[in-house]
Image (cartoon, rainbow, N blue to C red; front, side):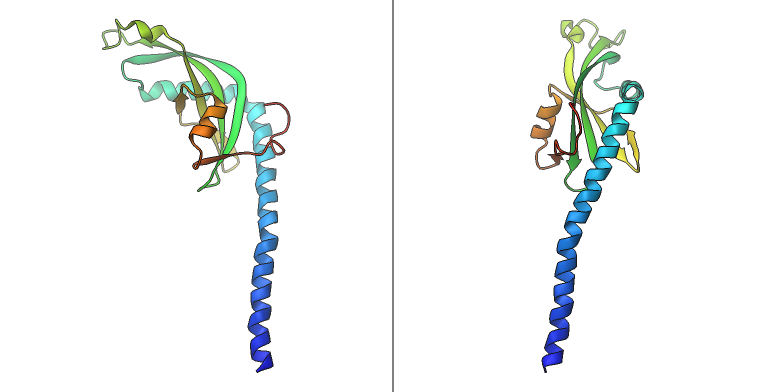
Length: 163
């Protein structure tokens, strides 16, 4: 009877101990990936910004407006999707539009208003990319706060330097 009780207890202890030991290891791997991704983002930022404008301009939104240019700001906040664990960068940008000739927005005065936004970039399979998504009227910190529950900020101890 003693041996029939000991074996399941030992197996249970190993499983619980392994799970508890695995969690810090997985956190270490995530932090390592985040440090590498942040370094890569900094190195490739200019090319990523150009790609963002190309993709965003090709989508045709907002309707009746053409993406004219983006003035990139220094601020970037990194977050991690709580469900997928996908690392995401929110970069501060000022977006300039112009009206499409003959479109509904051609005579709207507000078209020339510069829009503050956060451009969204994702790190997947070892590479940064973008779908051209902009979160208007949000700086990068606001984006993380507004999307609380969907994204969690990447710890400042992981994000080296002044972002």
